[in-house]
Amino acid sequence: MTETISSPMRPSDTLDQVAQLAAGTVADQAFVDLLQAADICLIAALRPGAVACFGGKDGALTVSFTPLATPLGMATDGRRLAVGSRREITVFAPSTRLAAHLPSAPGHYDVVFVPVNAYRTGECMVHDMALDGPSVLFANTQMSCLARSDGFSSFVPLWRPPFISALMPEDRCHLNSFALDGKRVRYATAFAQSDTQEGYRALPNDSGVIVDVEANAVVATGLVKPHSVRIFDDKLYVLNSAAGEVLLVDVAARGSRVLATLPGFTRGLRLHGDVLFVGLSTLRATAQALDLPLSLRSDPLIAGIAALDRGTGQVLGMLRLPLGVEELFDFVILPGFRRPLVLDPAPDAPLIGIETPTGSYWMAAGMDLRPGARNKVEGNPGA
Image (cartoon, rainbow, N blue to C red; front, side, top):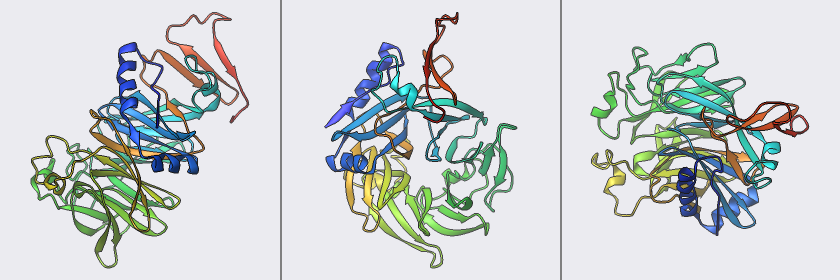
């Protein structure tokens, strides 16, 4: 059973589109029960152009879609949400007060994520990210490096792979993810050890690598379009994306084992308790002619999210996105919410949410700002 919900803050034609997307999203009951029992929600970046929220409430899947141009990487520190795109990173803060007084549906959502900051990175194709206090660490795919946005410059380069000779906006190796061990950056993934403009495209599909950032050395090779390298409880995982695989990597032995093989391009990996959540996408038309392992399989590919037992790799449940949504680029897990909504951060958004320590405000674009014309929602700091 799915409760279909769409963003209430767009023109009617867009509303119809996102309502259709919500209505076409389905999940196994086991998947819904996992979300509800864990009291978590998932927020995902979808291509083309939307951020989607999924939760479980009263035995049903809750779904909301908000149009957003080219969302790519995502990050959370447990409360705030960050969404990266081609040229910027937008940071959102949660507001339960605004949710309680949403003009079109008061009390329907349990939290609304309000855009509160934006970092203009330039054309960086922001992939993996991590919130670090007031700044954002991110995989700067276009510049083939890891970087930080701090509001003082477009970005601060922090590290580049040993095979990259210079920082140039040429996407030389398609560096796309990194693994944190606490606050230390330990590993990163790239499609190939190439040092020319989009040089990875001319190399074999299995040229993907994991790089030890601290040792500045390649520690795993032979991967097919890898993404989402992660450290969970001192174990190293990576998605062998174009083979549809979740791998457990043994760096010392320079080997890996397949934990699970899934019906999609695996990208986006998160852990909650003993459950691994894995993002799935179908193949782009441009990738279907590349003789990737996924393109040679006979089973149909899906876009969605799979829930796996972290020990055995067994599929515990599946969420499937509707036809027309081909890619899930990344997603995050947020605790304590079951029916979230992300506000449209576009400058011309028709409804504006404002969150402060002492109060919250809803404003309509172009509204009369004379005294008495404002709609204010009072609340306690941090509520």
